[in-house]
Length: 385
Image 1: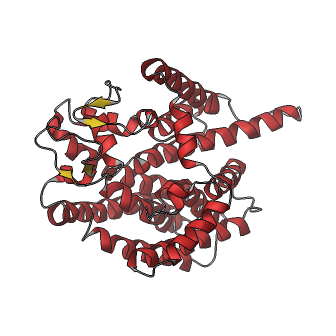
Image 2 (image 1 turned 90 degrees about the vertical axis):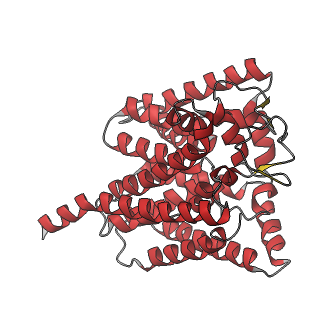
Image 3 (image 1 turned 90 degrees about the horizontal axis):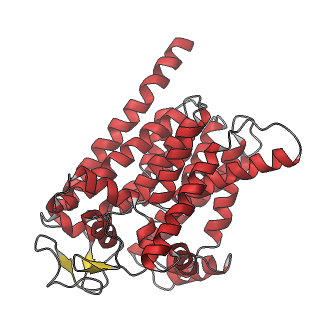
């Protein structure tokens, strides 16, 4: 019996990764052919507000209106070493865009500097990222009854269907975050610190985990006990983040992180209430899906809260979850008032699912509800931008 379990745990990461890879490959292929009408650059949603058609490369499709965040990642991927506010016909809507450099840099590197390959490589990088999330999620859940289910639940998060379908950075950031967790738990502090740093340079909220680890290390130190944590785990990402912020300050003359905080942080709880009221104002498919997604997230948050005392859940994961919950409840109306598939709360999702699964639950029906939520959420994305 022990051998069967071990064998199943060994196969689980590969099963989860392959399943997620094929599912997202079908999804992104359909979205490119049907929704984007064969022009993969259309997924980035370059709008007329921030892009000048006369200066925009001819192979890039332009939509009417503001467009979406993917247009800024595409702009950086065309040349990640050019951090000017305006280049390739696209104008950044804030210096905070430049601090999220890892995803566009990887797309640029995969394109080998060929500009016209970038719309493809942006999609490929995210496809590989969700595959890695599923694989690493199953690896982190190796002691649970169904590690493959955990990998599928993490890689199949409905927020990532929005991110992959619009050339956004969350899957890439999460992949590096889970890799850092795996390396940290297997006593590779320097490599874990580097991976945390890359996650933080993909999107700054990922730094919440090394901050949590640093707080635990500090508390243990104050209590005059010997910490089992190597400080490299949080010092490397902290120093890298500060250095890059300093570089952007020199190049752009602005503190990139300050604009991000002003735009995305609001009054705790207040924005949540306003967002709920906003989505009840009109009953339509978009708002119904939003409420369904919110219910599923709340379900796993509650499940995580119920298992915070489990000895099978590491302390750093509990502290990260608590800090991310506070941050989520403090997000501004810019996030709560719009239907972005809760992509901004993916760390809360990841930590909630991992806490619940690593507490060795006997009932796995919540996982199936998570799968259903993703299937329902994907349906509109298969038809519309």
